[in-house]
Length: 410
Image (cartoon, rainbow, N blue to C red; front, top):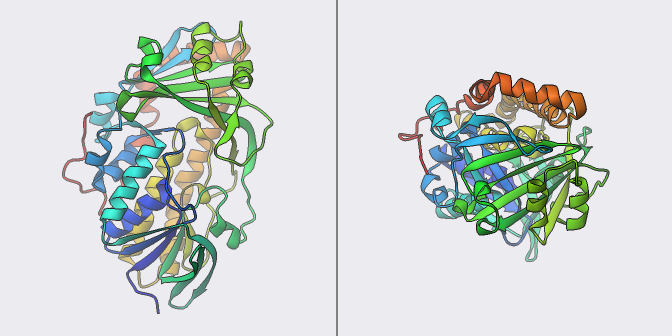
């Protein structure tokens, strides 16, 4: 019979580790099963809005993240062709005053390591690496999860299974969900460079967003300002499913051709010797529902395009909501997990659609791009920020909305 306080989480990425810590904070015990034998500092930079940082701070991660997170002063939207600033959207103290929590940029690996360290220090979280979820079976008392490791098979029993294992989720595959992720005809390229190798203007605490022909570029400092994270998103036909496929510098430079992109952009892209790339996939369907005491969170439930920088934010929100609801009504996990899915469906679907629309705006060219740029200038940065109220003003449920000091400065 399953322990009435025990829940199982598949995946030790940002979604899974946040869910485990949230479950522990809500009074449950969480076992995390992660197929990789060792957590490594992989991935690209992340932008975390106040909707996400509220949860992370409430989970007690502020001190762990202070040395590696950075609160940018603004987003500088730049014209990729002329090199001129289009508009500046305020962040920093302005966004913290308005929403009660900071806007951070951070390397994904740093966030994952901080979450993992907190999980290892929490007596109510058990982190099992090198264990792949092979199968699961639901029953009247909860769910039994069969995992495989180098030491053999393991059998975990709990009141619920939370699939936090990413866009190619094995939990979703076992649920036989029909709505598969679709290729978005875009490829994201990522790299980091030492901060002292870039021009002074790119070392400052700003998010730079360059809009140009058939591509856009984002870069900002991470790791406490020691390195610059660079992500380029280009129109492409490459459909690889690897998160870390090698990319050729000459190829990425071809996407930022001379005479169509400003030389400052091309010089920045030419700096790194090594690039990694991954194809962008998303789903048009609504939140993927689980069955019985099994559900999904993050990219396993609702993969989305990165144009609002809210993929990690939605996963962190999911984790807080599912943990709070499951802890409050753990006597009927199947019912409460359907309620969790219903509670998250509208917001995540709206975010998916808004991200798609934002991608279309970024991709404008010719006269449309001129109108877009003029419109952003006329609206101004402060009003553009207010348009994100529906994203950043989100409040987490108890016990994640009662931290004594939700504000932070870096």
